[in-house]
Length: 141
Image (cartoon, rainbow, N blue to C red):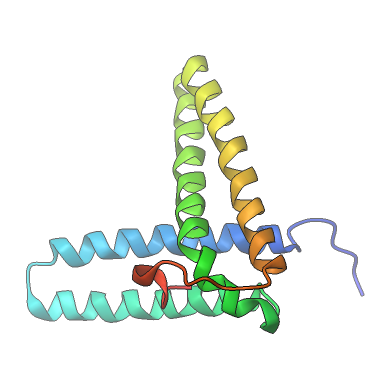
């Protein structure tokens, strides 16, 4: 078996979840701009497929005994993931533009947001109870 030293970790899978969320956002924008009902319906079905795949990946990242706790923290984790993705784009654009001040702000923000996301994931993995979670996000893990 070949040893692989990078890109095989749960953290890399969280990056994939982040990109799924970003993809869902772009498809939702396309749905909103579609000119016909047929196109809107086709795009909405594609959005459902992408979302289902993302949900499957998220559920695979937690052991069965933690899944009931996921409802409690998923909304926060999801928003932190999307903030990470946005900050990564700001960092790339600021670096290309040579904007050191923006690069520093976004890098500091990314470090903070990533730490908080990891913290909330650890809460799911260690949670003993589930006081409810976000009703809007209950079925969006």
